[in-house]
Amino acid sequence: MTRIALAAAAIAAVACSVDPAERHEADRREKETGWRGIVLENPPPKPSFTLLDADGSPYDFRAETDGFVTFLFFGYTSCPDVCPVHMASLAAVRRDLPAELQRSMKVVFVTTDPGRDSPERIRAWLANFDPDFVGLTGDKATVDSIQLAMGLPPSIYEPPDEDGFYVVGHASQVLAFSPDGSIRVVYPFGTRQADWKHDIPLLAAAGSHS
Amino acid sequence: MNLQWWCSAQAVPWDWNWRPYPGVWLFVLCAAGLYFWLTRGVDSGNSGSDPDAAGGSRRPRRGWAIVGLAVLWLALDWPIGALGGGYLSSVHMLQFLLIALLVPALLLLGVPDESWKRLESAGTTAVFRLLTHPLVALALFQVVLVWTHLPAVVDGLMATQRGSFTIDVLWLLGGLLFWWPVISPVPERTWFGEPLKMGYLFLATVLNTMPYAFLTFGETPYYGIYELAPPVGRITAGEDQQIAGLLMKVGGGVILWTAITTLWFRWFNREEAACPTA
Image 1 (tube, each protein chain N blue to C red):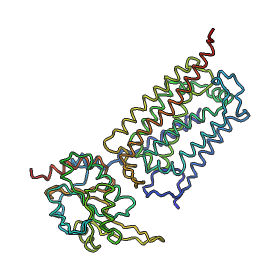
Image 2 (cartoon, each protein chain N blue to C red; image 1 turned 120 degrees about the vertical axis):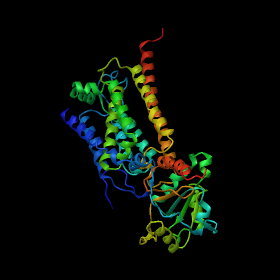
Image 3 (spheres, chains in turn yellow, purple; image 1 turned 90 degrees about the horizontal axis):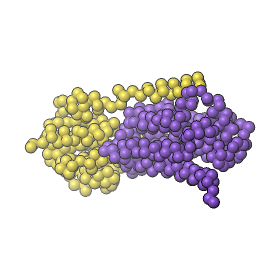
Image 4 (spheres, one colour; image 1 turned 60 degrees about the vertical axis):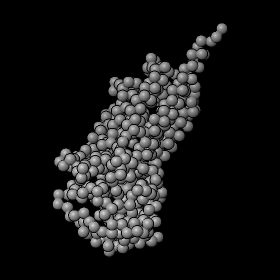
């Protein structure tokens, strides 16, 4: 019995070593700022750029997204982890929003891998999550310059493996803009659906003209 | 290859390439060794004791245990262990059903009566009697069930091999405690007959409704480790969690109701044999 008691004590010690303090940084932010994302105090202005959408037509980011809660993300469709998780999370949250909020929200995905991500491929990939998501493509230099202007690092191509597959290093955060562009919130990888769900109404209300 | 000894979340994209988990093999080998040590010198198919005490039949004991050990290995090793360790909460729930509900029942069914007597006489201390008391065993099992499904615990423990191992061991130990009052054939608690055993198992089916509802009807995914895991196929985190909840209800229900039905027929047959019609 002594051995059993010792083994039980050892298991209990391990089981009790869960550190809730490390569990969710967003809880701390919400207490401090009311937001679960990271609110930038002095963000650069909402960017103006024009890239090609999935139909091959020019898409003027400012003109198309002003007046909407906008989420902007730079990624690529072959991404094995961060990009599909972000897109799936935003799609799931959008599905559960009231219709009015759904209509007031846009998700814009800009590829950092224009060599592989054709407009058709981007459209098909985004349709897995939400067909209303907007996919944009442009040459790498243009996309890099947009990212740099927004304080994000340009994407980096890792050397290809023996099958020719390569990984693209890119910023993992989603940028959010209020409808009037006055508020910028950053959502790093690790943002949960509950976090988006909490902040979207705040974004909509904070920047609405009404 | 980055060798892991136990399955846990790795935050790397899932692929179907086999990976070795030597800790799992060692654990299952130890469990098998313990079983064969406990049953040493006992005929596998013949309990050699009072058939009534053993539930009215001579059960193919060793076969149950071997199946139980095989299911334990299946639940802990690649791919189920790896998928449940850090990719899909539904597979994590499947692991729970196998490790906490099915394997303990199979292992205990595989213990011959002689070994039961040996086990219970070796453990006649007050603590052992207390732990295997039906009310205490059921309460402890529920504590394990609820605690190991709390989001903070899952997210905290499944991120490490040590934590994942802890959850698996707690499930197995909790399951052994849970099934002990139902399966132990030594008539130590004569008052705990088939009707009470059925009530005990029925209560367990009711109690697992709480985590089922928690998972199935959650507005957003509860477990960050699965919500943010690299995707496997096209299943979303929300769907994955709903499947986990349904698995708990349906899979757990199938196991528990199978046991209830078996007990009912055993009780019915015994009552009928005891009261022959004129």
